Image (cartoon, rainbow, N blue to C red; front, side, top):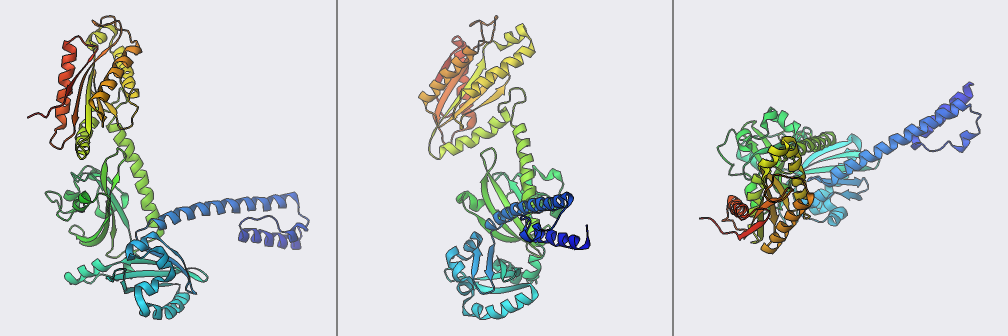
Length: 491
């Protein structure tokens, strides 16, 4: 390759890189290229295109993070046109996104803010980043202290990130402490996340950032949050946000407090979310606002960590709640689920039906065919019971040995009887041989059924007791049948 051709080739490769991998330019097509040179250019095009696709995917992820951030994020041109305001800005100020897009500086900071705008943009254009703190008037007339960081994104445009630090400044005054300004806060932000059971405070999950911050080990899971985070308190803290969330489960509680273990100040965002098992759990996003720097990378890593940890936790909890032989729920899951179900249904006085199911003469089955066939029989019966429950809210669990319990929320007496008859026929139709059964030449079951209008005064064990009494009656009256009795509260 001569020097002229080599120079032209290098110029063309540079043009491809700058343009994102477009086709060979018309000017360059006139050059005489060897096959190897053409292949080199095509390879560079492919690499650049692949890199562009990866960049687009990363931008989508970052866009989702910005849209769901609880903080005020805006994007403006130096001419003053606002190109974007995130939903968090409306939550922080009370104004709609449309109002903020039109003139958020004037709305929040008045004439003084507009007067500072010219000099602000000149300094920002020169330095590339500005951090400041001002008093803003949000919708309704309340004055709040906002701390913001503005930085140049590209020629002619910049982004602004705003935090409400009013409560932090009040705590500074009360305790006569001088905290660093919001400049240092934004330079060291970490996101810490943990999940607890609201009623007990038991920790279900804690991300890696929070464990490292508090110097916790893996054994923190299962402990009470008030024991490990609040200097070994004896019970739920009086300032626990769960008190407010119990009264308004769909709300979000944002608050700030100093921690006695670290002597640092935290801004916390708390809410209830649905856990993988359908139960409501408490989740807290905690940010150290003593001297923090909030970067996109740290937030992305935090979200990735919690996603991976939640996947692992969900897998572990599924294994904990599943009977290893039959693959259906185990007694532990049933014992945890039924009391919560009774309380949930009691709010609307909805009916709850419980069925106890027992395989007839199962000991004789094991004695006749061996425990291997006995295990096979348990698997077949349990799967048949599960498949006979079409509604997602119904479930069956192995109660112990050859006993199973079927739970039917929002099911009346008539519905429970229909299900019981269906279960009897389903097991009969399996035709599992049982030559020593006193009922038939195949496996059968006996069932006890009870139905009651759920009430907060009902004990979950009482439903089991009633269903068990009816199961005992079915056995005494000949087995291979169901017996029903309406639930009555035990005294």
